[in-house]
Length: 420
Image (tube, rainbow, N blue to C red; front, side):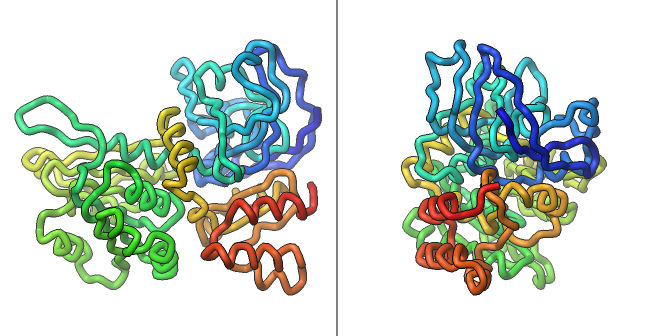
């Protein structure tokens, strides 16, 4: 079977190629990819090449397929797994396999599995680690975004707090506490706001900061203050760009009690240090945003570490249980990851988009791997509709859905777009 896929050969060396997949073994599965959401982690892998922790050192001779936020349908099941999976099933994958302690993961480390492809071979270790998950949602994009949502869920579960005088860690954010999401109006920040408002353990105060007014405005139109009130959460969006002393201002909102949980969504020294300064006693800072610079560092107040028990945790991805929780919450319509998506494209635009991801405005770039389409902002659909009737109809569909991508939009695109 032939596949078209974007493969990594080395630093800044991505190629869209067509090649033959080998015949599968009894413990493997062939799958048809429909959607993949591009992630900054793929950009980091692309610019670092073999220096990346998950990319094999011999990638130049044995290229890997990139993309790890994907969803599709199973096509052919090897004998070993026929008792558990069936042809035609929709699926999502938890890429953090942790197989025998290895960092190898789909989208970074394997020659025949990655999201930016038409067809793939799912290796045995994915099933062995229970990382091939049935997806029961209607739209494929939900299965793609289940992975980034699982990273967010994992970060919330990894937060911890202590009991004075006892060597016990209470896992998770402080229920009815004060929470801040710094640099939080980007795609992952939107997901974090969604989860904070709709999970069982919610803060009483949720403050979201950013320097970009347009992103804050969009975030506030998607996750509204009124919606948060219904969930008994006081939600505030704050642009700290022109505030002379942002730390003091953020602390004033809590009447000096500071923040039990702080999430940092940008690998910026000043933002990390800001998060440290606003931590309450026993406050937990989650450094969520992974830096590409291995020497990245920031100053922390160790006086507060000693006397106020402030602490820091970092998470890189979720686990399978986080992924299952993500899929279940989507199934119950408790969270809507469509809010993350700002651009749509086909497999032909993956190379250029991935290598320039930090320079492209907006949030998540969703790729439909079986179509040919230049990366297009959802907000530009109406303008593009003047010359392309495909976008005329897509603009109408998203307009009636508060400007968000939707199941209806996906179905229309897959039916009418040009095949690659």
